[in-house]
Image 1 (cartoon, rainbow, N blue to C red):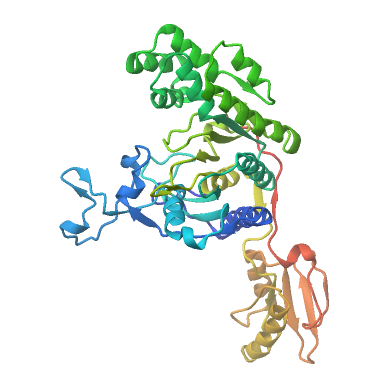
Image 2 (image 1 turned 90 degrees about the vertical axis):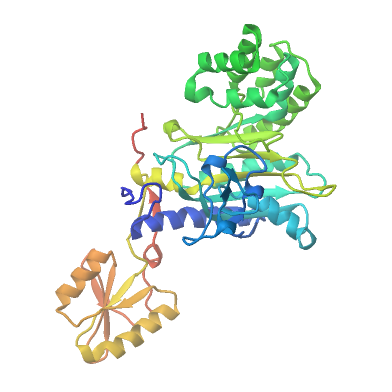
Length: 456
């Protein structure tokens, strides 16, 4: 069970909880690298101007200043954010765009990147939302153009990565901004960004209030508002959404392009990740830089947790003069996932420490010999530590048991060695240069437990 953080919004893990998080991170790295994504890391800070140039999230950005600041340190001047001041990044996509522009001469395009780092966001802490959290992103960025096939590939890679984690079943809910914007344009709503912002609130405030926003803020008629809501209500696990959209009787070239692109993603998913992807035309995504495919991912039975993985296509986020770097990427909320895994006991580590063997001391003078044994075991990849005190063997075994260490090593006065599995009580002669624990005990194992009841 995850502990409640002493400072709200800044979670910390106990050792056994951290092992679960490391398992999630290692699994994601393995899958990403199997698909050829290279790891990068960007700095924790960006200029305020860089962070805020796409999307209105200034209330969530943490400015950076010294405790004893002068005027030049203040990220806010005259009630307005100083674009040259420094702030902590709120996601990894905006810093990545800057990274691509600055390092374009050193990168081979299309550039495939994964990035796992902390981010900071000043929002109200609640379940699934923290102020400091870890994200795991993958992106493919092109130079000038990026074939649409990468939108398909990104969705399939994420489906594979999430399937390898000890989490409940999930669904990638996918839409396309071109489809949505073309439809809104086709029904006469030209402020497509405004419509998207209203539709993005659908699950929070419901269709009636969204219709009210469309009419009061964007001047939509009753018929236009109902058409927009009819589009948002379409959800299919195959390409039948195309016929459903066509049945609404709206025509637009951009709509046609979006339908074709979303159809390609869903068609590939039906074949390669069956049951994991749905076309959901209510998905909008709040940030303005998305231009095509948009994705949000939920855990089945835990939908109130919110999206655990989101992102999409961006064509103009990164540019250098006339040179543009379009990309597509998805971001997994690692901290949100780990919090749910721990709070619902969805997975557990086999022990709370990496150590597989505790070398016992027969006397304080045996410490040097015990270190020699430990060095031999470690040289063959066996995590080993030496007891701190030459206490009674019962106390040393009890200490190992409390730490979750499965084996205790003893050296007799005649120089022979024995190892005890303290879980079963079995004890046998062993040689430090040849003995190996069972493979499942060599390192910590993290496995899914029995499925927890679906959250309500």
